[in-house]
Image (cartoon, rainbow, N blue to C red; front, side, top):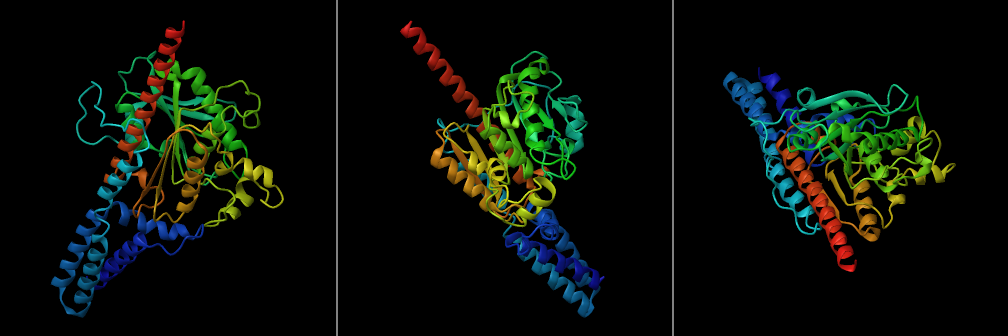
Length: 409
């Protein structure tokens, strides 16, 4: 028992240390760092209980190995101690991030519905509860499919705000059924319609197939979402990792004909963007980004094909017409450099006339929001408040324009 406990303790100690200050940041080796650090950063409370139990059992077993196991697990508990407050610290960071909004958002009540007991479901359970239409074709390719999520009691021809969710996976993997479930469940329960999008993937398909598909899905939303109770007049977009890149790029290139072959007249503008731990700057070779893009996504080098790379880089596409942004990234991300989001935010704040909100979450790892943890709960509530405030501001501005027009008339 002592040797097992010693192994558990050492593994926990290394995971907690990596969650605080990761040392492997080069793809794909960084996956080895992220795998143990993600539970350490997102579930430090339950892991602490595991190490306490392992340490006590080891100590009861006696002997030098038992003592070593107890000490190792005690060290793991101590290392996890500083991570246990990160969820609350993230809540404070998220609240402060929303300060650029005018007026500052206030907590929102849940609309009347069937009483919701306990936590909202996540993952496949959430999809089963809220799925209204599955694998809807928005194009001819088998990958061009989307799911529509909505509350069962939402009127089929209502005017609910819409969120389009774009999955991650390094532009080469991932699936709509496994991305953004906590956020979509939170919004759907509060009267939103959410659309989860699949798109063509590399290396079988090369850039710009991915952004073309996201644009085509947005055009479908604009033309068809009213049949599912959504409001085509308010469509926001979100995504994580590669999905964060695609969400940002889509938001910054509304109706760009280069990304809309065969559907140039489709409306692909969005009201707001919420990229999480996204890749936003194709000019910085961080964490092995260039190798991935050259070999499996774009298929050219930045030196030989600078125009294609620049047009695919959200940082290079920012202009004064950018919609409101809420950018979220973890400070300990080992897959996508936090510098990617920092540079996007800096550029947006230089140029955009709309609110730019940024939350850098302490010790959060890549993909932290895939699980219904306390930090994820704080995050989805902040996203909801941000999007609702943007919608209220748009409605207020529209009314002001109508009122001034009536006065002039």
